[in-house]
Length: 124
Image (tube, rainbow, N blue to C red):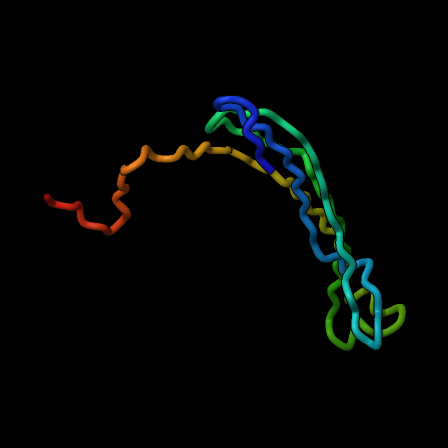
């Protein structure tokens, strides 16, 4: 949310939030799995000049999943199935990077016209 404080100075309140579905903490309702929401939040207030840039980083999410693969039929046999299956742990790491660059838009002088893209210049 921008607020112009002084000539060329913009006060910005930046509250980014990112959500993703979390199937590990899903709730079962009437036989359907409803995933939970996992969210990451940050909040800051800064003052920037016209066309200056704010970069927010460090919202890191780490996930660790266990993947089990097995040979059909043989992998399902009790005790013997361990010889025909494989379990691996997969770790992923995501970092959210937010870049904000405000631009001041100034009004045109009275009577000025602007040529729009695809518009032919006026001939007098």
